[in-house]
Image (cartoon, rainbow, N blue to C red; front, top):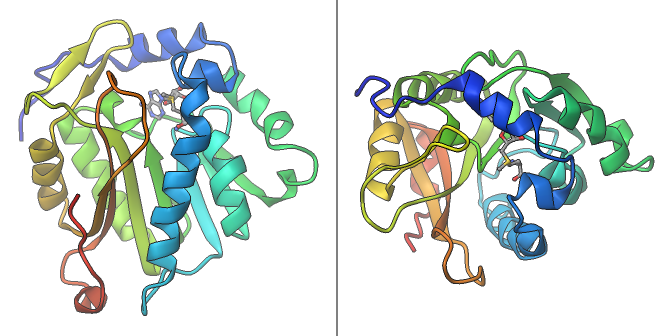
Length: 235
Ligand SMILES: C[S@@+](CC[C@H](N)C(=O)[O-])C[C@H]1O[C@@H](n2cnc3c(N)ncnc32)[C@H](O)[C@@H]1O
């Protein structure tokens, strides 16, 4: 594995997010208008996983790098009994309950104010949802984080990753928020290092042109007996 060759700086990323308003437009970098399409694509992806013979349970999910809880509110709470949150920005955390709404906030479980590089899952999760956040982690920290996620899955649990990927096939750095965008090949290499197997992969459709392609991956522990009963759908 490479070292932190892209100079990812966790403090710099947090400083960037500290200045961003706690709104859908804020957490989506001015692309708030794609949120509904994004959630619809995620719901279809989740539906297909939940229809597998050895489907994940629907008890506990965790929203990792949750922002104001956009995914928690619109995707995870409607599908799971309880949703934990991991998010390092205090202002976003303070906005979550109000954003999620009085009728749904009782389904929020534990809120961890911590970066994913430090998150040590304490529960067994049916779904671990990671979206538009993994570019803040170095390759090393992403790999060890995914190993911890793998070990915290409930029976038939699945790790979901929904991230931008580059079209150039190379890593692209964004100095403004100290993040990187990885290529598909780099993600696959990291999944392999973390001993994770893809059971489903889709490209998000109906996003505006001019933004990075967005891929969804469903991952389970490599060697899981149930894998043969599931299907891989490359885009
Ligand atoms: C582009 S927003 C996406 C928010 C949410 N996943 C969504 O799709 O609505 C990125 C989020 O990642 C959080 N973040 C940045 N660095 C992080 C890290 N090291 N660990 C966990 N979250 C981080 C930011 O505070 C921000 O809430």
